Image (cartoon, rainbow, N blue to C red; front, side, top):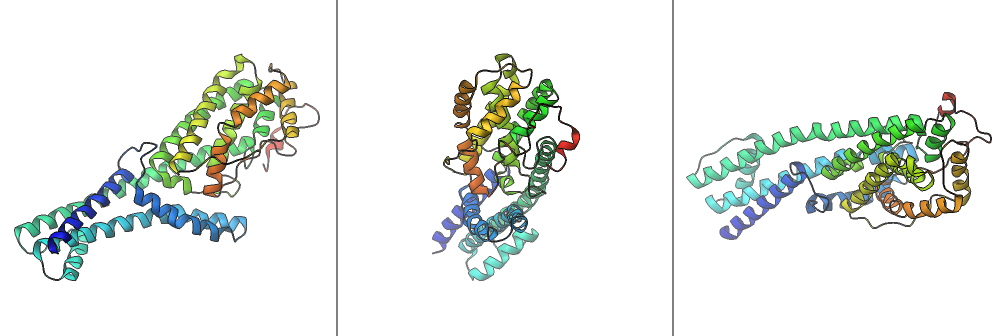
Length: 352
């Protein structure tokens, strides 16, 4: 029995440390995801989300916002208990005696890096456990600032986009703002900055999957809506504008589509059916370009091209929205486009 317990202890220790290493230290590939961490997230997230949906939107968003930090704590506790049990089994296999005493001794060593007497083999096991406890502590101390730094950078960009496109941001608002002021070059610069933000968001959310569960400070804002609105604008310009206007839109569309696809794969989600843009809304949006100085293709060609582009990213965006209980942005919001062409004034953006 002690031999079996020793083998089981070694396997458990290896399993916990490998999960901890992949989750906290290894830059993660899209297909690599710790099974225990992923299982815990799915086990608790679905009932948590179901309970939150019974409340009003503001309360539900607050409740959902607790999940990310709490899930991180739960993962740490599970890994710590697994390591304590694994070392307890290994100590019992080496020294014998009461398993309860060995478990208590193991927990004390892991939490305080203390030591107790015994044979040389037992002291070696205790030394490894103490080193493991100290290593886990310092890795977690370094991990937490990285997570919250990535969260802060993400939310800064989300807030900046909200001032330009409303809350949630809408492609119609962003396009009208650029057309009304004839600032298409400014929109080109915005697209390039969004490209950099989308690349960083993809990298951080693949490395720290729990970031996807962290909510924005405002109910009307979320990172998925910002990313989707950014890709909406790039896709619309790519589908309607002339080739000279496609450089920034082409690159931004590709990185945004890539980010949505990889994040949906990260959470093991299947594409969802969605149709976010009606014919009437497309006509209103297309009218923005007709009133601007930007050359564009004919209406039917633009609609066909845009439908093809949307099919490459909207299903993944909708799957993420359904899973994470986030709202996708509208393409067009009533009041975004004036009946007559005119410059968009700063007061028109207040409250959006």
